[in-house]
Length: 571
Image (cartoon, rainbow, N blue to C red; front, side):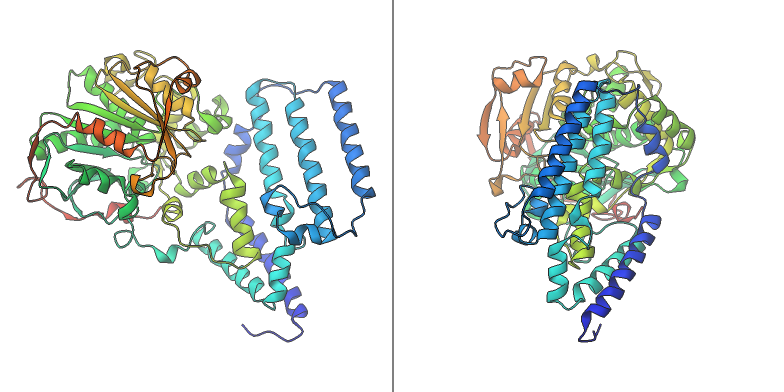
């Protein structure tokens, strides 16, 4: 695009076009279901303030305003902000930007203090806090071209090219329906993500079963099945060869199978939790046994996949079926007492609304789910990209994990609504006989197999206390490990990178609260993968010759090469 030397005239037109496009995006891109969110965010009780505390906050705010207006904004020695959004020197060196940031920070301090002063039950306070943080994240001066001195500087340096590119980025994101977090053109499933060699050996309407090619001459006689969350694509476990948990398991001599979920369309809009347990998780277990000839297998569940696996194990236990010899649970909620930030949404009104919308059929759209999770960390996963992509005209760098994060999946409405009510709202999975699944009354006390339980210390989706709570529910021999970092980065932490730490406790004690467990735990540098691999090896049985072919003819033959076709389906 060519520009008149007097670029300011063009920049003004571009800003006007940018504003128009931004308005179109707000109409076209709805980050969350507004009706559901409004219902879920209603206060649970009337809120009030102590008159004395409110008067104190008002006085502090007025004092702040007076100090703000009395400050000498012409000085060159303004203190940079501690907020990384405004820490660049250009913010403090520009009097207008520095004043805007200071006014914003005064407002933020006051609103947060008012939130802390609310007299209400804790859940109502958390809802108010969540709403305030969303407002503060959206209203930050860095999000607006009129105040963002870094974006203005770049526009001047590029003679308006950054504004033109920003508008092009905005229009592209409107068309694709989500904010670009990475350069998605740099990735292709099966080409440079999800590349571990294998084949699809079984499929039905809900999933494909992938068997991976052995990388060792011998494998353990008990095969290993991974059940990833159906809320995302399975290849979070197989991003790149050097950070693939799937490849790592294969390298350890595990004959490895993985469930690859179909991305539901309207043909699956009536599928229930029971369907996914019986016709997917239990079906996968039985299929792996049939292919390998093994009497028992080892299994792993990740996040919601772990909740589904725990449910399936309880169903099998009720039937007297011990097909699974051991189970690994990664960042999994079984006891839903502590559900972290997601609890802010969940109450009777919200769940009832979802049941009315889709409890008897329909889809929970993948983009709505993905956007909801992004807005749990709005500065990092939303507004950071608004500023970079649109105000500065930048292309975000290629990052495999964020590519996966944008590859959203739908959920069948009946499945989703049942899960919300029975687990998130009523926590019935841990109640003996609390739910009936696949015709069986569930009692986790009957799931007596050995388990390996992993939780991430900074996880905001499955808090460390929520992951640890499984140790109080599952009666078999247990090993618990806590890793550093969050829900994904804590799990995908290969040993070769020598990053982060993990904590173990060898005395076999599992006190009721996770903080008490942590006090007796020892920190170990690096990944938890090696500890887990040694544990899994102990449950793998003897070593046998690795198979020379996929599946088992004639019924279970290779249908197509991994990663298969289901994982390529878009929401």
